[in-house]
Image (cartoon, rainbow, N blue to C red):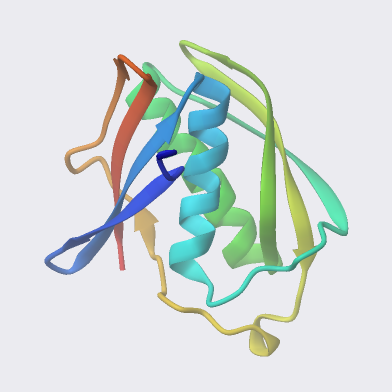
Length: 140
């Protein structure tokens, strides 16, 4: 049985993700997908536009928080909703990729959960037998 790209974790006053990926780029793409699954009841079926994204960090944990914070910034400030992510590169201190989706009027879309911020609480990124695994929590 194939493992899902992520699992939603319940936590007191927060919500989290346990994310899986065969590679680091897949892990970061799946993290973006997980954030969209938490934040929205539905995402666009067709990616109409592309948005270049990048984040920097001191290590993989910091990089994951930065990557998800960058996604959340564009969701909150510019009305983006993303249906997919393409990661060009992940290095120890930098991730570069594209988000696929569309901008919409925030009043026209249904938020499942109001994600306020990505937290460092229990954040982890580690190599496992099947590839990579990460845990991250969001302040809601």
